[in-house]
Amino acid sequence: MKNTIARLAGALLALTLTTSFAAAQSKVTIAVGGGSCLCYLPTVLARQLGEYDKAGVNVELVDLKGGSDALKAVLGGSADVVSGYFDHCVNLAAKKQELQSFVVYDRYPGLVLVVAPSRTNDIKSVKDLAGKKVGVSAPGSSTDFFLKYMLKKNGLDPTSAAVIGVGLGATAVAAMEQGQIDAAVMLDPSVTVLQGSHKDLRILSDTRTQKDTLETFGGEYPGGALYSTAAWVNSHEKEAQALTNAILATLAWIHSHSPEEIMAKMPEETVGKNKDLYLAALKNTIPMYSETGKMDPKGADAVLAVFSVGSPDVANAKIDVSKTFTNKFVEQAKKTTGSAK
Image (spheres, rainbow, N blue to C red):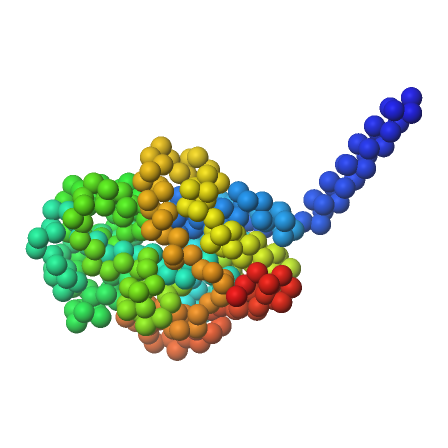
C-alpha cells in the first residue's frame, strides 16, 4: 500500500513539475524561409539541440518556400518571428513597415553568382552578363537585388540582364544544366551540387567567404537573422531574449564541433540521400555563420546601399537603417552568460 501511495505521489509531483515548466515557457512560432537551405541551418539546429527549451521558450518552426512567404506569415499574423534575410527589414522600411532584427546568425549572405556550365567559355566576368538571361529565386527577391547591385558595381545598367525566376534548389540546378539561363544567383547546397558535376564551374562572386564579402560590400553583409515587427519585439522582450540566447548557444556549438557532428544532428529529410554532397556544402557554408550574433552597422549600411540600387522606393525613402536592427539582446546575453564575443 505504501509503495502504491509513493508511486502515486511521485507521478503527481512529476505531473506538477511538467505542467509548471510548460506554463513557464512562452510559445513562439517562427516562419523559416526555406528550412533545407544551409543559410537557415542555425534556426533548425537550435531545435535539434534543444536550445529553445533550455532558454525557456516553446518554439514551433513553420517551413515555407522562401523568405518573402515567411515575411507574409508574420505580417499576416500567422507567425511571430521570421527566420530569414535581414534585407527585408530594410526593404520594408521604405513602405513604412517597421521590422527589426534582434540576432544575426549569418554574417555573410552566401549568395553566389554562377555561370551556367554551357556558357563558361564566353561569360568570364560580370560585364559579360549584359543582355544575358540570369536566374534568381524570384523577381524582387534578395537574389534579384544582389544581381542588380553587381551589375551596377561593374558599370552596367542594373536592368541590362533579363531576370528569370528559377526558384532555389533542384529547379535552379536544372535550369542551369539545361541551358535555360546563362547564369544565376544561387545558394548552397545547390552551388556545391553543380560543382560536384562540373569541376570547371565559373563563379563570378561568392559571398560565402569573408574575403569576397568584404571586397563586394566593404563590410560584413548580414544574411539570415531572426526578426519581427518592432511592435512584437518591444512587447515580447522576454521571448526575444530567449530566442537570442538559443541562437547564440547554437552558434557557439557550431563553431566548436566538426561539420560531420553538425550534420549528424540535422533531420534526415534535411540532409537528404546524398550525405557527401550535403557535407561538402556544409563545409563551404560554416564560415558564414556568425560567431557573435551581432549586427555589423556597416553591414546594415551595405544592405541599404544594395537595395537602393535596385529599388527607387528604397533610394528615396531616407531610411534610418539603425532602426531596422537591435543588438541589445545579444549584449544582454553577453552580460549574463558570456555567450557572445
